[in-house]
Length: 110
Image 1 (cartoon, one colour):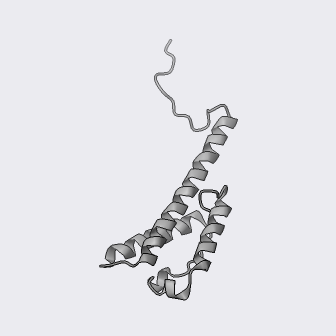
Image 2 (image 1 turned 180 degrees about the vertical axis):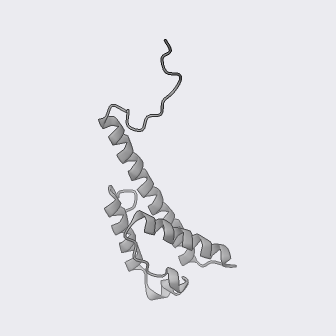
């Protein structure tokens, strides 16, 4: 579903559905402060992913839920990044490729 999400809203909705579909037993293997997050922005997703990775790094043997959440949150963040790049490419195409185009070489000298 993440790969098919065509907007930020669709990615965030997919994340919400993923979180809601997990059982209480699933969440029992996740630190309490990382359970059932409300992700309503790209920044919120990045923050949650970072917290998951930090928590995993402190665990001697992270269980499947933690591993799955880290991978899923990373994939969601990557999808948001892809959508942002696509949006930037379209904006660049709309202005003839000049938006944000770096200057290369020297300017004319007379």
